[in-house]
Image 1 (cartoon, rainbow over the protein chains, first blue to last red):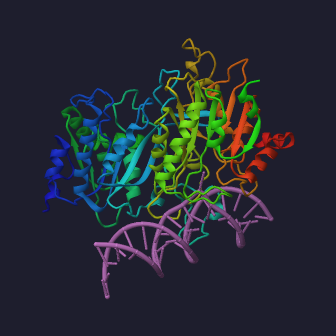
Image 2 (image 1 turned 45 degrees about the vertical axis):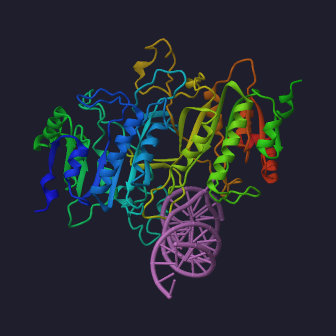
Length: 273
Length: 273
DNA sequence: TCGGCGCTTGAATCGACGT
DNA sequence: AACGTCGATTCAAGCGCCG
């Protein structure tokens, strides 16, 4: 039994950097996470308002540890958003993590967008009460890899062609599937009005990330979320037949995701996701 | 007659930094432009492959000059995009311009997005020949202002409410209009095969920028585009009853936009824009 | 002399558009 | 419908330079 197996398919309560230090190097295929944004969100235990430079240092240490435990051809999907008044903030964080990793793709998780054809705004956003700032309708998902040249499975999350005459025109384009691009419209799942975790993302998001990295046949991927929160990443991993490792410092959220991952809850969620 | 009047409603052929130096300070309401990206595009005359640091310095000087001629409550909309292999590049440029200005809003010009509900991808993009990069479906429009607190007219480009019960719910929400947000879906206009300019943007884009800044009643706004290209900004200004100032270094594009701005062409364009 | 890095060059790409 | 053309494209090969 390998050492990494000890961590698999569990929700572990503790500090993620400390816990990652116990994991062997190059043992994880995919990391998907959304760290505390440090914009003063009220979590149960984590202090989300440290000085920005301190936060950046913390994120840099976090990035280094992720680098160590990730396989050479692994993918690290890092979700972070901004407040309207400082939209460069998330990029400063990304630059810190970029000290160890390389940004291979910059995906935009679009939560709200106005489609002019139908002249409606689809999706949701938190309205901002300001006469100078527009509402913020997106967050970043940075796709970090070690060398920036990991082959990804674009068609696994592909969309149909607009111009059907392109189907079958080239060797690879046998099906009606083409590259989705880097703008992913995924609205929030509104679970009966209130979300269990202030920063939880839709299950569809980690699902698409895992698929994009590529489900190698015959081998179970190991998927880690160091800030598991309500458990979306673990849930997506389970659904796709991967081994998950969930780390979360807050006991309340640990329990929450453990419940979510139990058989019955899984069924309920599958309907909506 | 004021000195700035000499420049109004003309397309001026020349180097924009030199020409701006001749303009009086605090005389322009809105600047909208898309600079050469410096990624090796073949323009007619401009060298689009200078060393990156040199390019950044140039952009910083450019930003300073924009700052000088802009009014205190003016808006500077700066469009810039990336190639998939370097998505942080545009932000480095923005940071340089940020040395004089403040980023008030970061607007995303979305050209292509996959909407999962209907399972289609709307909009267009140029395919990317890569197994590691996703297609790039957006560009930035940075809204710079001098102090970051210019009041904007969000509802002038508003969209209808999804939940109609919100109409009239608050004092300000008298009409069926709400904030569009910072994700603007504007697909390319397909102009008969070949685009006149490699980097031209849809007329709708500067139109929305001007409206967002706010058309003050009783006073004509002065709108400048220092890299006019094919003339979209001037055309939008004209349509909205503003005075435009177009600067463009390439003679060929100067003529092109002058034609575009002539009465007949204007009619033709109005149909499509 | 060999290998590694940077730059240049030409081939290959695939989705959109027009015929 | 099928096919030709064309990229604010990427990629690999090839050459020169240097340690």
